[in-house]
Image 1 (spheres, rainbow, N blue to C red):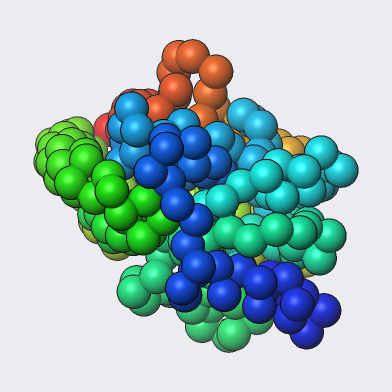
Image 2 (cartoon, one colour):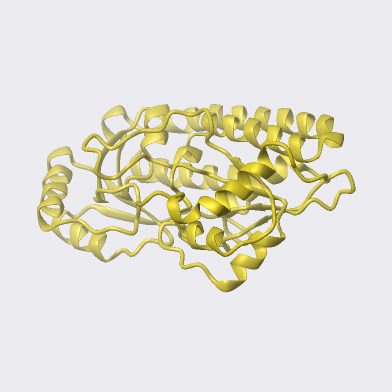
Length: 300
């Protein structure tokens, strides 16, 4: 994926930088307009904001940020925002043309600030942005969002601190729950094959081996070579991989081809990049629990 911020966007980023480093908007009147790039980030941020602010998502429910095509209305949403929350790590590549056409000033919060991303061994695919799939790393997201909201709205600092502490406690409980669920999977079946390289942080935290991906990239907006497909098929057969896991937004054509060759099961209803409108994944914590339940059921 190409970098979000290149020379074309210097002016837009300079504007954002000035807002973040000294002219943060005042939120004392409760009217601070907060925008997050994705639905799961909006939910995480809403838990920190509580009743003090309303956090909106730029992307609609069900969108795949890797392949999202920006709409003209998105420029207006960003222009109206006073705080913009991004995952970072080149995840929001779709936002580059929006920043080029957006006026106004806003504070920008990068949720992954301070975390060390996984890099592709061959340096071909950049860094892995999918840190939110490890709830322990989301604690840092919460801390960064808390600090950003305090900068934007210092009068409500104690509210944001208390909300962040309460949500961090929930994330720690979620982590314990996931560990308990994963314990039901035999060690030799803790194998993950996904549509694209999205679950590395999850695997590292909970003792899975990433046995491969249909698309050998941190983005779903790529395609494998015939050699890579053949290698994945051989690997699945050799390791007796039980399942291929896909996000609901993923194209399943290649996965079905692999399933035809190997007899592997396809689980095509995970929610890795977006929340849902109601059950089963209306919040980040619900999203993680639903994904884990489906992974455990397929592998145990």
